[in-house]
Length: 417
Image (cartoon, rainbow, N blue to C red; front, side, top):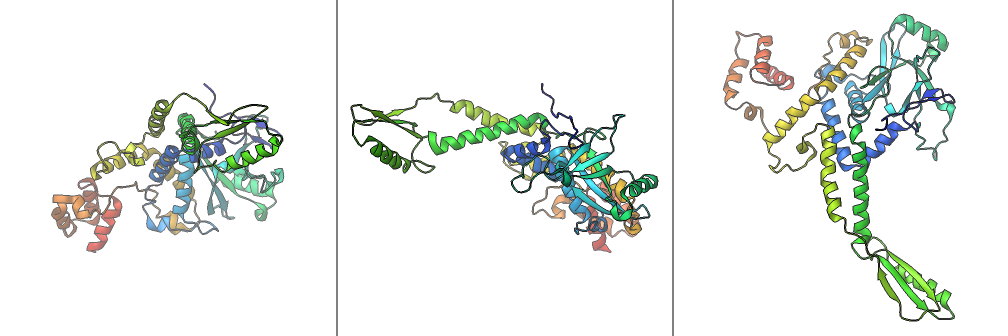
């Protein structure tokens, strides 16, 4: 097997390359975007990682950078990178009290590790918006556009040393927190890396279908024109122009024009004969989405694939519950990261009361809470108005006994008060 992510030293740019052409994230993006099943699976994976956002409303509505983004905005951006690449990055700014005053999401594809030191360590990240050289027609790639950052380390001594090296706080550009699913200071790899080939295959199958629709459902071939006319060249060009009028998406099949000089006979159409691979293509088209879906451990119903039993509410609820359990580790990783960063947030009113729990997604379409509770509705109402029980006790019972989530419990408690 081939190594999934090649890494080498680029001394000219002072970085460790990410992939053979230093464009692995960019290639992943392009392959996923060209695959119908791949893009659907990644989007579903992203939604389940981000869930319904952070449980604490005051926390997730807090604006945390000069762009005016909230905690929830940054969470969803990180979840998108986590789903697509297996990692994400955050830019951190401090004040002179070593408190974090700004947190901004950095697209992971913009970052590369710095070159190794003599002791085979590194403590820098290089940032450039076009490592993959995809936009050089708009702006020439320049080494001068590369920005350098240190890895996240909130210890005062480290910050002091970096500020001094930068020439003071006015020149200090902060740090970057870099998360990778493969470990510390290792380039991440997407969950679905084994299915990238299948995603690429799906694009190829779509291209074949497109060509068949546009051309090959009608016979392709060549028109052999036997021409003895002294004005052969002029007539040939005129005939070719006329034939072009019959080509294109909405007209006839592919056609080759061949003029035979000094020949005899009327023009003759010779069709190209090819093998019929319809069955092979059909089998591939049916199996490829299944293979891609397995890479995400994703129930087919979540990507709107009919499983033969329709799309009943019970089936969807079970699928949501299952995939919430599958993606729970990713949400826990996010919670740990935001806890680590915002425990150092400058506004003590936020970091002292913040709840870093991410609420999982739930499937509820036009379903009231009474329908969810069923025969237990009267018991829940009785519990809510039971003055002998504390709010904490009520919350515990509503959660553990009746299986309600925190959002529903908050609405019920607040409604009674």
